[in-house]
Amino acid sequence: MKHVFKAGAYTLEYTESRADTPVIWENHCHTEFEMIAVLEGDISVLLEGRHYRLTENQTVIIPPLFYHTVTANKKGVYRRVTALFDPGAIPSVLQPHFLKKDAYLTPFYSSQGGELKRICQTGDPVFYEPLSQSLMTQILYEDARAERSDAAVETDSFLHEIISYIDAHLCEKILLDDLAAHTSRSKSAVCHLFTEKMSISPKQYILQKKLALAHKRITEGTPPTLAAMQVGYENYSSFYRMYQKLLKTAPSAGGKRKDTH
Image (cartoon, rainbow, N blue to C red; front, top):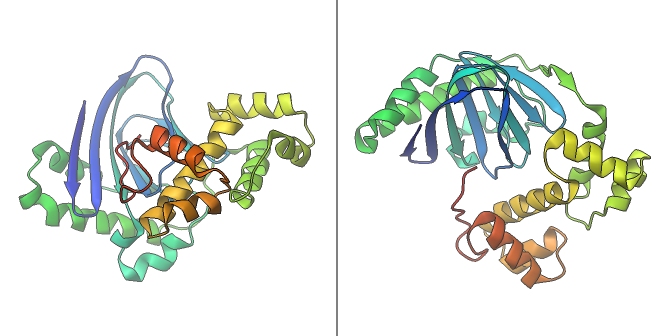
């Protein structure tokens, strides 16, 4: 069950589901910030090689362009509220905090998720838009006030090493040979380990991150042909096809993607 509520710069979604076995729900990368507020259940977030565990009333905010997997840890009912928003939605006084965010998450307790759930279910944007924006502002302040620490339950050194390399060379052509040389492993070992841990192949991971970065630059005003070159595409027609396939829209269509997960 899902209820979506759009409030200005925020796209809120309340989700309720049941897991009969531990299961991967999502495996994706956003061009916006994403808030995840757990109302009921026990989930893990794998973010760029680091595992974080969230339980009832815990919230995290994931920076743009960071690939993450959300997994249910136990059987039972899961309820959560998510929100997608661009950097422009963040109050100016908090911008330095969020725009410097790295691949570390700081889970924090928040009581705002329950009210956001009710707003999503009510669905009256005219009446509830100011309240939802106020609640999201409170959550942003709570994140900024949370004590910064690496709260990861576990860090995978292999993933951290390989993802750091990909991020550093995202605007270049990255081959499996490069990843193998960087990690001192065979190409087959790199491919197998990465796919097993991330539930996506290195090739698809790199592709999605490149297109997410290109999408971000296009929405910021960069011409699509230049954005394609900036993420390492020499052939624009190839870039166009992959962009349209993954983001469900054309690069020139104002950068508005039709999918959220």
